[in-house]
Length: 377
Image 1 (cartoon, rainbow, N blue to C red):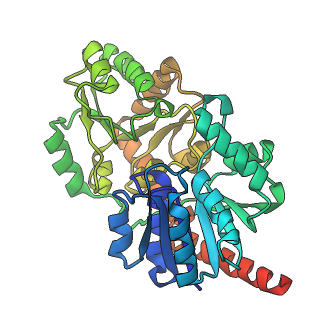
Image 2 (cartoon, one colour):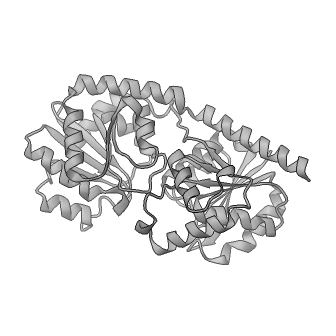
Image 3 (cartoon, rainbow, N blue to C red):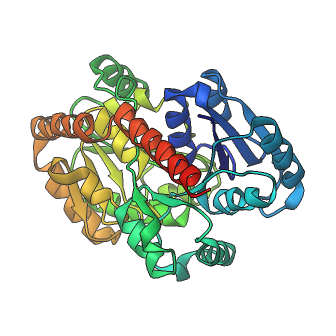
């Protein structure tokens, strides 16, 4: 069976990471069409032998990619076309008019706690999805919360399939050697708690709110250091660097550019912090850290709290005072207590979110929709 995955782009994001994970399990059955110029995740996808077709558009709303998608449809004749993210979903539905004769699936990777917080262009494409949502055979969500939110906006409930993110737990695993080496590289003494925030610089990620909370922890005299990693995070004159300087946190906060090897960073942490305000479905960084044996403190966004379960901590919102309070509670467990929670987090990932089992569920979905499609012809 050949599945063509149509995605907006291949930058270093959660949806792109999950697509790379999924196609790595059965590379001979997959191909990827990127509406925009492929980004850094293209390397990982090509590395496992999956072909990537370049739509070449600078903006996903540009029609420049349509002739190229027509050519790919004619060349591959895929059994299934699956869209990823809003623009990719709409493009997948368009393949029905471009020569594709099989079933279409959508993959929604975003939660919508308050649509008014979204950019105008994002609000438009979410609503366009509601208008076009009868075209896919199924709509896959990586979060039950996101499914309910989209259905409240007009997406059909009868098409819902919730499939969690899957993780390569041979890659994301506890590593004492990496822990020691990375902490030494960062200059973090062994008697300090190392807290990590991993994510691109965007208001929804709430980096600035977390810095206010972290300043409160420092004012309490707690032995803490924070590393923040992601696209746009380490810009010398950016808002995060400015906020760090203004708060007097230069010696206690390290800002880093995104890394191709996050599995060497997570084991160094005592606690992952995800302070997001909105937009998360199933946050990859939480699952990756948990796979490495690191407990997480998350806000109640998307399915983050259900992923963490009893193996971590939850703040009801991204309010700095609340985040600081929950962080204090987490650190009160001490290093040994956090390590025990981290071991439980690893077990939870193995039990519920291993890549192979999630990929099998996707494979069953592809087979089921093809059988249904052919029986209806």
